[in-house]
Image (cartoon, rainbow, N blue to C red):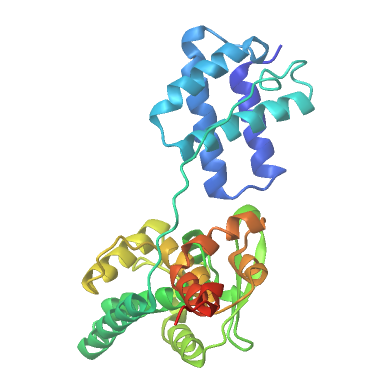
Length: 313
């Protein structure tokens, strides 16, 4: 007989040590399982063998107030937990084994920026940076220079905000113009920086602010306290500059990622290459961008549609 709290802790240790999950994923699993444990407490369940399908169904009903994406993640956490218990023979019968759970997530197309909007954001970020250089305020100069470099890397590589926050100086190779990113599940991918202006500002940033990187333990992007720059700080910065640039839509780091993929697609880059650049494990994830490229669709239909060959004149 296994105490429920004990096996949850065993599973979390398995996730941390053997599966080597990212900190973000581990925190999500921990949160989901603790929430499940709290939910079934009134059932006076202490041992894992006492959990049955009815309690899991009741938990699923409890989750109806959450967004479908969150529900899917929480149930995936629970499923992973019970699969582990079955494999490790903590359980003879997995209560999820014959439980069919289908959560419909509404399909929403990612929002993207056009090149004119990207240009406005660039101009505003560079303008603020250049103003601060003239003012010679060291802290402000560092932050606004850093912000420009963040925008450059976001648009140049299509990086996730977590990949940007975790980026280490040693993974930015400016000799051969290559940045190494670590995505979901610590999956590594290398992105080439082929624009000379981007390479140059990265070099200047490193030359000016290598001290901040060293004090932070090697992070490429740091805050004014010489600590790793958080994902939330990056989000707030992007939101602020987009607003200053008079962009009339919500702009996030992920908006840059979607824009990166969509504009490559519109420039006839094969979707398989885009999949590799984005770090998608499945082509089905990348295919969403085939639905967002309305400019490319219009161009194709206006120039290639067979109706153009029909005339009554």
